[in-house]
Every structure is written in structure tokens, then in C-alpha cells.
Length: 348
Image (tube, rainbow, N blue to C red; front, top):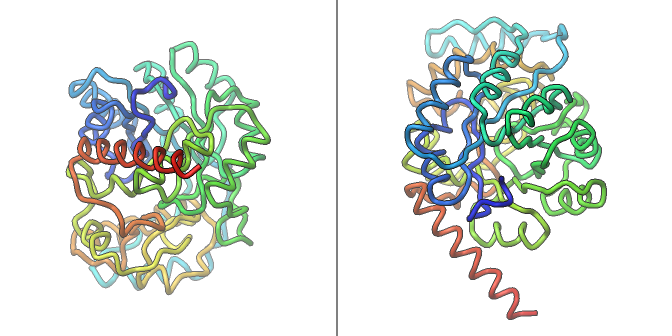
């Protein structure tokens, strides 16, 4: 499925509203592969998005699911009080720092019933039985990984491909087990290094993700052995993306550094450095408790255009993102990749 797409380019699933049926449809219609992000959605909302996407295009598409971690009680210390003080700025109360499974079992049933062409998983491994049911439904299964060890585990449950996420990527790190002692939750590998190490460990086809924003980046990972390049931040400023106006403006300004943080969700994620991120570098490793705790604050800040209290997820190369219609961006990336490969061939 993925290896057979006319354009080896995937629009990454971006949970929280950025990934829309319109964005996914535009990328798939152009020959790439568009994705819906099931994270934070109800099962009914996911089914509605799948229906909306299918009304826009008959081309294949993907859906990404968050694998819930083990249910644990976490010591949040004074973090709820810190969030309450920040949320007061917009007159809202913090949310309940509770654990949930993100409606995972119900959403698994949706993608199986809908026979979604490609189903990817992030934050962990799907059960082997789920992979088998997806295969029976005709779905291709992708597991997002950050290390060779995770890639081997993905192969063991029957994944068809691995999406290799480099440390450059925006948004949440895909580490299976978030180590509180490490800022990134685990080993930090750049994308090309991760591809090389994972290729030596497993023979599964690789999707490359992390900091890719130009066609030359796509060419680089294809030359390194990937079957497709997955771009997220590059699509955040496309016309069809559901990105909030404040985040669009900050990406366009290109003035902030990026950093890994647990401040907003309790899980390592790369975003633009703002006040809340800078003030809470010691946030506990407690996902999804912190995500639920900060949700009202983040929502109020977004409505108010307050960039200092929002989770502004973006990859390291975010300042190079181009505000274009998605189909035009795919065409530009494709032509840039072709030119880069031709230039590299001529150089050699």
C-alpha cells in the first residue's frame, strides 16, 4: 500500500485538530498518503472523520491511534497548583489530572469495521491479536518507533512497516516507555542515524519522520533507504490544516527556538519555547494526567491568542514551512526531491 503510492510522501497524523479530512484528502488525491489523527477523539468523532474523508476522495488514507500506557498513579507534587495559577490568567480552572485510555478499544473497532487502508500506532505496541484483525480487514499496519529495540518489538507483533521518528520531529515523541530521568524519555537519535541503526536490526520497510520540510529532505531519507517520507510540521500551515491561528502566526514568525518538554502533557514533545514551557522544565512524567490537567488552560489560551500558555508543537525546521494549499506543497516537494536526487547523482 504505502510503498505503492505514486508519491512517497505522507502527511503525518497530528492530533488535536491540525489533521483534517480536507488535508488528508488533498494529499492522498495528489498521490501521497493523507492521515487522520484519532488521538483525543471519541470513536464516533473518528468514524465521522473517516466518512468525511471518503466523501472527498476514493484514494487510500491512514488513521493513527495512540496506544494507552499502563494505568499508574503519579506523584504530581505541586504541579496542579502551578497549572491553576497559569490558568487563572484566563479565568478557567485546571482539568482533572486523571488517567484514561483515549477511547482506544472503541477506536480500534472503528478502524477495523471501516477497513481503513493504513492504520498506524504511536506510544507503544498494539496487541498481536489487533494486528491480526487489522490484516484480516485488509489494513496495512505501521508502528512508530524511535530505537532499534522498539523496531524489533514492532516486527515481533507483525507490523508491516515501521515509522522511524528522529529527535528532530515536532509533537510527541513516540517512545514506548517514557524514562523520567531522560529529557526525551529515551535515547535521542537523529533521523538518519535512527534509520541506519534500525535497518541493521529489522528488515521491515521504513517510513522516515522528523524535521523534513523540503524536497531535498525527502530525497535524503529515500536515498537512506526509506520507502516514504512523513512530514508533519510542513503541513501545519497548509490551507486545509486545522492549525490554530496563533500557532500559524508563531510558525510564520520563525523566531522561537524549539525544545523537548513534558510541561503540557506529561510526555516528551517538541514545541516552540514559550513562557509555560520555560517555567516548567521539571514537569513530571505523567501522561495523560498532565494532558488532562492543562487542557482547559491550553484551550482558553488558544481562544485568547495567548501563545505563552499554548502547546505550540513544531519540529526543528519549522521556520521553513511554507503556507500553501496541500496539493501544491506535495507537488513542490516532489519536484524538489527529484532535483536533489539528480544533483546528487551528477555529483557522484
